[in-house]
Amino acid sequence: MIRPGATNVIDLSYPIQPTGMSLHPVYPPIIITPDVPSREGILTFPATVDKETGYPVNGFYSRVIHQMMEGHGTHVEGSSHGFGELGRNIDDYPLSRYIGPLAVLNVVEQTRANPDYEITVEDILSWEARNGTIPQGAAVVLHSGRGGYWGIDQAYFGKDERGRDHYPGFGVESATLLVGERGISMLGTDLPTVDSPGQKGRMKTARPFASTPVRDVVQRPPNDVIILEYLANLEKVPESGALVIAAPVNLADGAQGMARVLAVLPTLVTRRT
Image (cartoon, rainbow, N blue to C red; front, side, top):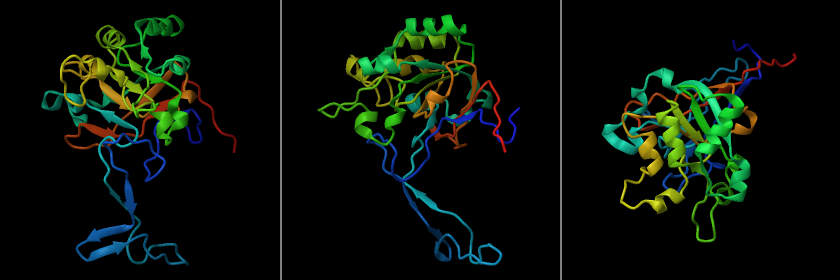
């Protein structure tokens, strides 16, 4: 049970805001304005406040968010993101698929030595030797340590002198193990994609923009594994024992959806009052 004041709930999401976010070039910057179009013209908010009661006297409190795409910031991807009408939209999944045991694969040291590192089967077996077999329905996430550079694109994306991105991801063999033998529900990362940018360079055939060998394993129907991207604060979560809740905003027919991803730690700690 989560009690008021509990400190065992960790926010794995970044705030949505106009500045300070790391954005892939295909995503426009977010613009937030206080001007709300209505049938009566443009209403400017926040409303005027009555200083005695604190109530708004000519409207309500709201803002307009422009240029927000489904995948801005921390978000969830359904399999339709990579496979269109063959896959599932985020509102097609049962809610139980967005909740599960959290397994964190820490590759911070490997990433420092090799920014294009790909998680191997050996990495998974080593994790299981310490924590037991990854349970069915789990969310397995990659922790690169790059979250400390959020909003600093050069470092976060690992851009080289030619502007190419370098960051770690899951390898095809490790993804195959997780999907085929462990039956995971979600695959996640604290980076833009669960597959490293180098995978596109190794593809021998033309594929759609959102498709790579790892996604072919993870998202191709009927696997339909949910993908979590741009996760935050993974350094605050143990490698095993936590529960993740990753429900996206309920967009009808959404291939992706922004999400407030929460990790519930196994130990309950309450703040002193």
